[in-house]
Amino acid sequence: MITCSAPGKIYLFGEHAVVYGENAICCAVDLRTRVQVKIDETVNIESVLGKTGIDFEIHPYVSAVIERMREFIPIKGVSIKINSDIPVGSGVGSSAAVTVATIAALNTLFNCKMTLEEIAKLGHEVEVQIQGAASPTDTYVSTMGGVVLIPQKKKLKRIDCEIVIGNTNMLSSTKELVANVAKLQNSYPQIIGPVLSVIGSISKIGEELVINSDYASIGNLMNINHGLLDSVGVSSIELSSLVYAARNSGAFGAKITGAGGGGCIVAFVDRMQVDNVAYAINAAGGSSIITNATEHGIMVESN
Ligand code: MEV
Image (cartoon, rainbow, N blue to C red; front, side, top):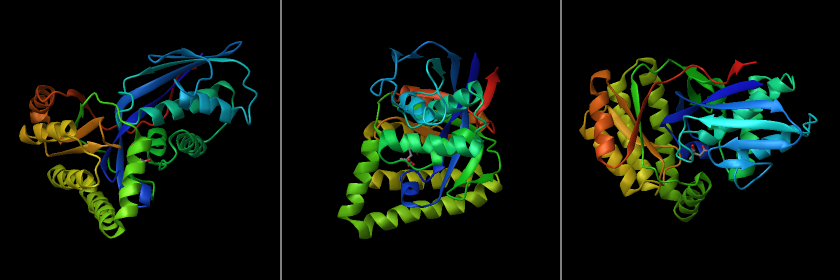
């Protein structure tokens, strides 16, 4: 039996804009998906979503991983059990984490000797296959851990402040949201193009702020980034209520993280204010998760 895990992620800045080649800064967080694998007679996949064989409705990412890896290893039967701290379909990178953790676990079980770069690349291909469009950000950061400037894949200094995630508990589809932004961009290229490019500029300025651990200024830029995400149509009343609850209770700043539509917000918070912010998010109808940045990407947890 092999167990591999991979972390979720939050975006400091740059989701959606990154799909158009703009800069983004993304950070792995200490919420992990664990995937246990062992040889079996047939393919069995088990998670909170149910028990299936290869099944592109219930377990699309894991099913796609098995089919892709069958192109270079003879996987006849395998039993795969998934456990996760990461809320599903909420913009915190659950699909990237389960994808790269499954690739890593099968890589170890079948001794394929894939490098981390190769795991991240295959993970990205699987996300594109299932979602239609996906930047390599989520799968890269989940594989490597740390704080990463995209598209340069440059590791930045560790984030040393509290991170509070607020979940609206409303599912959203990354595929649909990315398509909606593309529609808006096609209708109003002179307006949406500059908005996406300003989001990219926020990430560029943000790089220096991360290096200087200037969390107050990072918070200001997160607030601006949230407004710009709202302007491209990916916010909602529920997301903005959690954003304002976090800001009004002392967060440095707060914004949507991930595709938006539903899912989660992220707030950067001073240690002294964490309980206030978490309480305010819950009181505004969300579910708070207090976490931290992590340097640990894929880990082989047992062998
Ligand atoms: C989703 O976590 C982030 C998006 O930018 C899509 C992507 O980068 O693939 C919305």
